[in-house]
Amino acid sequence: MPSRKAEFAFAVMSSQRYNRVRFLAGAMVALVVSTFAPAADTPQQKANFDGCVKGATDCDLSALSPSEISQVAAESKKRNLSACLSGSLACDPSRIDSPDDVRAIDQATRRRNLDKCMAGAQACNPLLLDLAGRTAVEAESRHRNLQKCLDGSPSCDPLRLTASEASTVAEARRQRNVEKCLGGSVTCDPLLLTPKDAVSVQAAWQRRNLDKCMDGSSACDPTRLSPAELERIQANLKRRNLLNCQGGLASCNLSLLSVSEVEEVRRAFQRRNLENCQKGLPSCDPQVLTGPDLAAVHEAYRQRTLHRAGR
Figure (cartoon, rainbow, N blue to C red):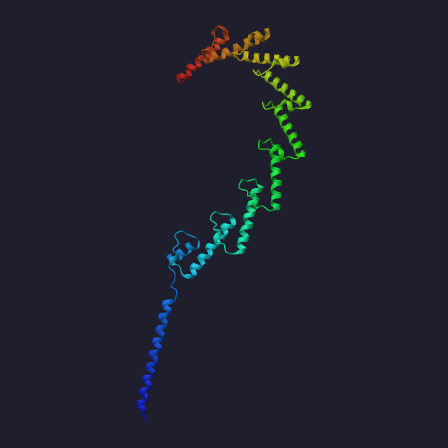
């Protein structure tokens, strides 16, 4: 039978071995955890991950974890799908693997093409149009052509007009021509005028010719004036000539003045001459100055002399 002392020693040794096993097991667990647990991301790693997610060209894929690579791939697919839906040149159709996405891209492409065709764009692809789209595009094209014809555009195709549209376009053309003729445009076509329009155009021309003659324009055609209009023009010419003579203009024609008008012109000249002499201008004619005029001229000269002397 073992003694109590031996039993106690055996118990102590067993406890020590148990504690050493527990310590070694804990150390191995800590080593495993420290080896395989993900380390905290540095600011550089976080910035690289954000750049990769956004598709940056300086993305370093080797620095990403498997889960981060999955996120980057998912975002890249989303960007590609968005590009394909918007018709961007950045779209890569070979990356589209979902039937739903393929249908969505096809529908978006057809909608954009329909908009281009409705607007008459050269990028329109008629092969992508369905029956309803072709009908709508054809109707819109005819409407655009009708508007061009109504506006007199050279791109108008009259062969596409219906009988009713052709009649409307002809009336619009006639009205445009009437407006040109009324305004005296050189593009007026008198052959397109109706008898009623021709009367209006003739009256408008006569009014313009009368205005030119009243203004003394060289474009005036006196042979197209009525006797009453000639009298108005002669009276207007005499009034203008009298004003020119009173103002001392070179265009004054003394032969058109009456005796009383000659006296008015002479008095106007005397007033102008007095002003010129008082100012000391070289156009002053001292021979026509009266006694009071000479006194006024002398006083004006004295005032100018004092002013120059600074008194």
